[in-house]
Image: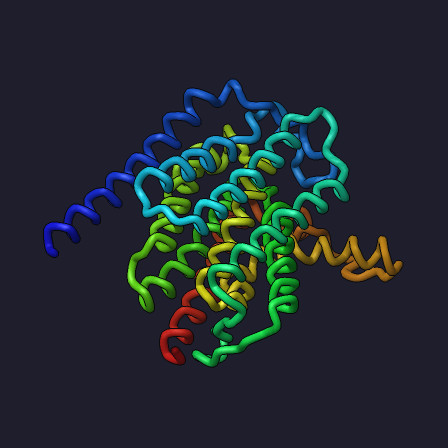
Length: 321
């Protein structure tokens, strides 16, 4: 028994090391082969990103998927999730490569299809009961259709708020690491380190390797290839925690940073309602343009806020569970 436990942990450690080293090396080798950013016309300091290698999400996502398949235990459910994460990366990368950005309604339709696949897969293997999470260990059972629609909404929101938050060097990846790390602490404390927990560690490791190049001043950008896959990973992790409502506090900075802009645009476009008229969205642009924060200040301060909220959430969950 001890021998098996030791060997298993050794393999897991090797997998994490391979994921980090491979991501760092491949970014260095393939950087010049990636598409280059055209500059973001409406983003604060968007011209500074012009010419940088973009779309490196294809590197760290493929490394993550390969290492998860090689060093983790396989299951049909996990394989489907890996395929969905990969496809969300591929669609993002194709958009990164395009001279003209894809139509937002077309991208929304793709998100919808992926969200439905996740919902059907999760309900098939896990059922329609979940833990309230923020309110203790109370379990709620919903009709499959209702829970499925809620899952679709969660996945769609996670993809898009994470995507909209990718506008400052290191910001979205750092916040994603904090979010996934928080879920890891909760799940590991309750269930130990299983295949889901190990997948979370692998994803955090490849993001850390990406940040080696993306820290201010960055030389590489993840593009939609990375941000869309990150959002998908967070959504799937929230579901597999069986406490999906914890997505709200454990990703609250991502939700506010990227989500308020989506809400602002949607209300204006479809209902002609104006909100936050004196606030720039995403909020990281408000912090830089209006408040005068540097990129580093934005990343560190947003990360501090998310870390404090996450620690309070994790501690409260442990006390109530």
